[in-house]
Length: 228
Image (tube, rainbow, N blue to C red; front, side):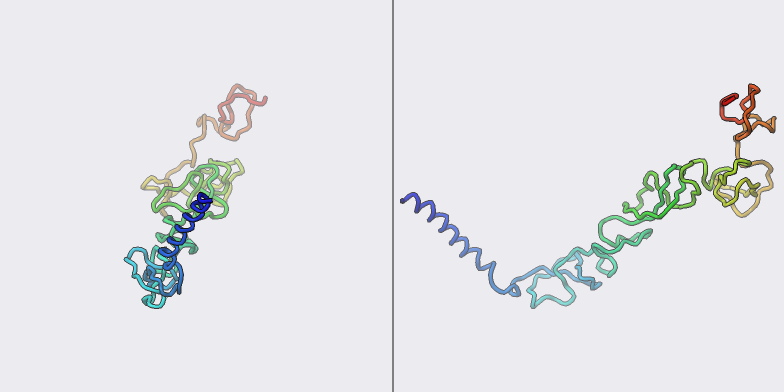
């Protein structure tokens, strides 16, 4: 019996003591408690964690201060956790530490994208992710030989350089800096826009020519008399 009383009495005594010590801090009007308050300069409901808080009760809280300090820019009401990220700027609107950028899928890896835009969150200055491009200039994203920097191959029925025209004799333009893009100044040089001919002394031998049974690689694909 004595053992039972001890087993019950000791825990009960400890509970009463704990209630006497802790209890008064957990009961009463919450307006009597003191809290940390951070300035909410932009009035978006979230405070600035970069400054020291003010300790005050609900009734004595300073004006334009809040208990939430999760704002990462307290001078812009459009910047706060959960805000809509505006792409292609240097502002982290949703306070996640990343920045939104617009990309397009580049399935063929030729540096030119296509399709609908995709917004990706990246670190500031991070390189373009693999298989994405910052442009949607590709007219065939399943063929890396077709893009705005490709040479137009005549008589193949394809708009190789994505300029909206097929097999046309495009005007040449000077590319003084060698970046692959021409200026508005035309070039007087003669020639074509590719170097795909495997025998430039015979006008019947070139890519997409009809292969003949003659022991010659007529279509410049590296195979002689294939399919014959």
